[in-house]
Length: 260
Figure (spheres, rainbow, N blue to C red):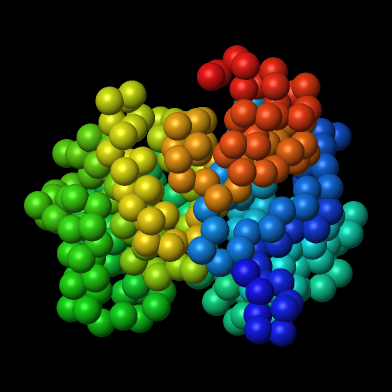
């Protein structure tokens, strides 16, 4: 996306992002950009650093070095594990609230109903009045096809239903971008489709999305850009046709050959 003056705009951008766990370098100079309204899907073998990249972007992991920009403003700059510069605390909190995240595990509160799980964030973090939050929750539950489950506790739901509630919970905070970390990997095969259907609907309505997934059909159908990672690096990026039909690196050819 560009402004009228021609300047390129991105919601998230990383520059030379590195992440070490002890002596193990998990991310190696990763440069990634996600534009408004873009669906970016990250694929690659296990251990490629895909989930660590997502967790680094939303600060669940502390990066070892590199820079992260949000809305083209410097979010943080780290050198040799020491923060050189970062957003002011209030700005940083606001930026993080604009990132919704859905994990492999659903992480729903077991002692709360479906509706209470969805309203907890808006009520306690954004101070939305409870009646208003309840209305938002019901709209979102209708959107993910679970309105009839609003008073049910998570233990009474299937894995696919729990993941759809987790997506609704993230959307209740009105994020600018949704991060999905292998959201279907913990599901039984017959439940995967219902979660992917919700994600496809989000994409069709213009939600900016950054997804790590092994669902190649979803990636081919929905992604504006596919990023292939291996050994902590981005080795290729391009359209679905470019990556799936004409992979350039031997690593991408080997990976795609093993799963397609």
